[in-house]
Image (tube, helix red, strand yellow):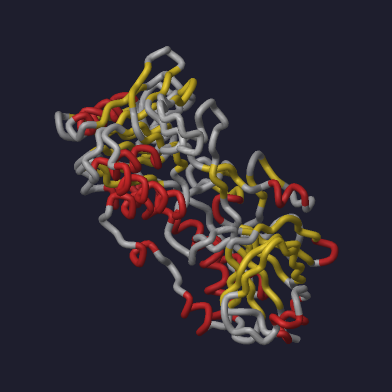
Length: 438
């Protein structure tokens, strides 16, 4: 009997799952539901798109012809509001689909919509409508959602989140129209630093705000961060660490109440006032694990627990990507991996389990890297965790900083800022846990 597979999310894990599902089962009904308004894209390339070094086509992962050719229904701009495992059903609020779902497919999947839409072969615009779909197997790759702290002034014109493609599109339009002279980026984690780098391509001076003691607090130690900060200073980027934003403000003298109030400055928790004409929150996203919790799936912290074949506590529901907890190869702890290749592999592994030919996912080696401000950094392991009594080997000069963590002559982690030629060798040493000669 023809199966129905539903994939929630069209980012790395979701695309990995539905692509492999179609390869493994040529006849199944495959439906992908995503909250995104745009066709699938690579979130890792958003800073490049903001910088202007990549186009919208460059960041796309799958275009409409992929879904048409493979007979996969993609429902955009839609929120899965509930999973009902005992009925093998999901509830979806609003959305539009490409290609449109043929009437016989709707009947098989359990989708409810108007009869007159059944023969349309274009986008289905669904306004304030609720749909139901039934599935044989379900994959959850819903990832994360934008976080925008409700601090005073967060809704002023010129204040944006930096998380998804629609955010970047709005930022670019604002830069084109208003030509800001001073930018503030809130959050000096990886997305914040990459966002600041992108803004320098528009010749906009940037101030980075970070509540931790230094930038990239999860990836670098203080010495590595200080070297990177020196490089950033040369690009007209300054750091304000150990502080947070207290208020975003405007000085709008226009008497027309219909004129949007535009940001002009913000105040930090240390009472420093910084002038600006664009503010960007780059503080990551919130994991959408509530969907799994409401469905009674087993979770740990903010993630869904899965076994080695990416199966949740419900045998007919699988998960992958940011939303699930997976094994860290170094620590054997259950962690969340935000790496794009990991998510794709998890989705592909889940697809095998969904069709009944399971393969095991071996876990992750979380290696974070980025090329920013003309230099590359790579980091892996517990480099900022002082609980481990590891031997530290540090090599540095004015252009690079390297730190290696060793235990019984075996590599347990490393930081490389600049001069990353040997990173492949380091990855192998971590994977194989053989004696390291550094």
